[in-house]
Length: 160
Image (cartoon, rainbow, N blue to C red):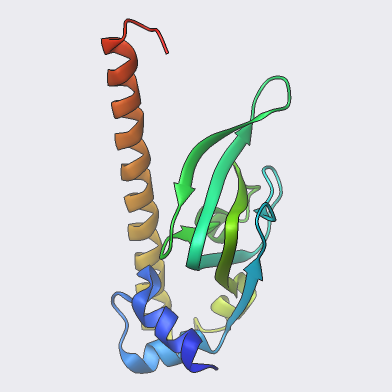
């Protein structure tokens, strides 16, 4: 476990309800890596078993539309979680996440996290609660952006 992993866990949405010892335990199962501009972290339709925390940088959230082009749905920023729903349910991801510039992420594999259930059940519960809170916050931001866009289009009488 590195000091950097420990500090990231404590500052992240995962660490909101954790004590320092819990942060230490959780940071022991994290890996980190840096994505280059345009590198794909998560591909729409593919399943993986990892939860990612953006430590530095931004990720574009996009979906493929008719004609094969991608549209941007949202931009995840430092401190946001990426891949949370796939981490929880194991289903294929609903969008592609791509680095916007250089991005540093910390990742946690589901199997490593689940290994803590017996030895640290309160930690697992608190992390899951943190994941749900973070996802809810992202959803609220996306809904607000949708309402603002809809209001703009209505005020312009449907003209872009």
